[in-house]
Length: 194
Image (cartoon, rainbow, N blue to C red):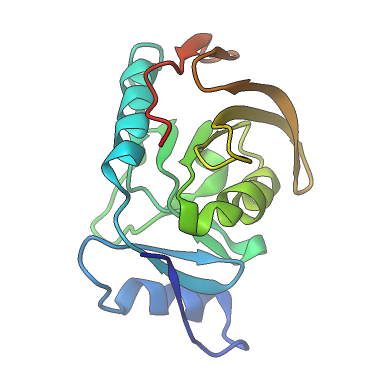
């Protein structure tokens, strides 16, 4: 099943768009994001997708400070790109929470991880990295199971404007190293490829 978009007034303000996102009753288990001003509803990811995210999450917990967390369903806001994004993983300091909080500013994230799905890989390759770079998130890890037939893992960093530099890229089966503050080498050989 692929993602679907929800029609809304193109002249809505950012606040109206966020209110719509927060107050609408969405299908249970779906992932609802605002990508470039368009509300996008995606089905829950497949098990292979979740296995990859879990393996990365497990390794991240071994290197992050106690006052940081690794979140799977945390929405991060990038108003300048009309984005309310829910990366597969967000590493950020533990936010001070109130009951009304539905998201955090993207600039608080230290690392975001996206694992592509066949139906919406373009967002993970194009729209989301532009938003993450704009927000100044230092590192973006893209696990692309559908990259030109050869699954790859690419680490982006050094954001400038809405563009990241490629810091490293490997095929599934190789290792990739996340720099400080993580100083972590990820072995991708256990990532399911298809």
